[in-house]
Image (cartoon, rainbow, N blue to C red):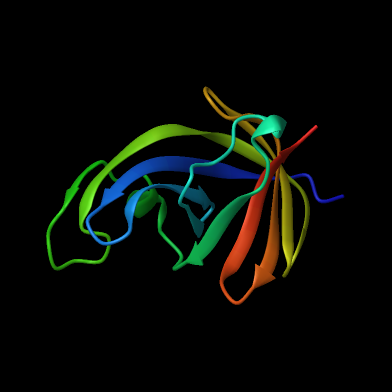
Length: 122
């Protein structure tokens, strides 16, 4: 058991190229979640696409990213807080979120290439 603590940020990103999605940031590690980060176990597994690392400043960016730049479109933070990393390996992250919207256990599991699955766990 790891019990490492860190900061998480979830942004609503209305990108011109990738469409509307959530960005999940865990201490610099980042995933794009096209159907949004699940808030309940009943929402099932969702695709999460591993992206480039983001600094804390990049993860918290709110506003408009200009055309021609990576991620062009609008971005707003919809939740942030602390997470506790329960277990981790190159192929999975099991963590507990402590935010105002997203609370409880969450799991990321590597599927193939840069594709992961994200779901809530009891």
